Amino acid sequence: MNSNGGVEIANQSMNELSIKEQEADESVQVTCFSEFSDDVTLHFQIIRLHKQIYAWIGCNSAKFGHLYAAAPTRPSNNVSVTSLIGGDSDNTGLGIARRLVLKTGLNIVLACNIPKNSPMLEAKAEKKLMEKLISLGYTMRKI
Image 1 (cartoon, rainbow, N blue to C red):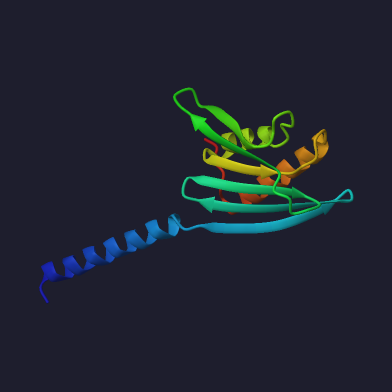
Image 2 (tube, rainbow, N blue to C red):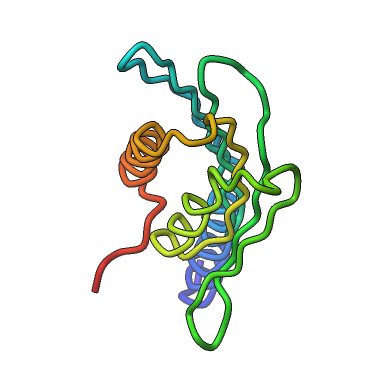
C-alpha cells in the first residue's frame, strides 16, 4: 500500500465519522420526569429537536394546556412569543417560554397547564425545568 492510499483511507474514515457526528447531533432526545412538592405533582416532558426544544409542563394531570411558541429575533436579540392554543387572558407559561429562549438561545414550543394565578407554582415549575435543561446541556454557555 502506498502513502496516498493510506491518506485516502484516513480521509474517508474522517468523513464517515463527521457524518455520524452530525446525525447524532440532529437526533431527537426525549426526557420525562415528575416532581412532587407542596401537595402538587408537576410533570415534565422535554423533546430536544434540531435547534428547537418542545417542553410540556403538567400540573396534577396530563392535560395539554396552553401552547406557546417563542423564538429569538434579530438583530436586537429580543424574544418574540405568541400563543398558539389558549392563553387569551391566561398568560401562564408565556413568561416561561420567553425566559427559556433567553437562556437556551433556541426556539421554544411550550405547552403548560399550570393553574391561573399561581405565580409560586409557575416559578417552581420554571426552576425545575431549567435545572433539567442545564443538566442535559441544553443551555447557552455564559461568556
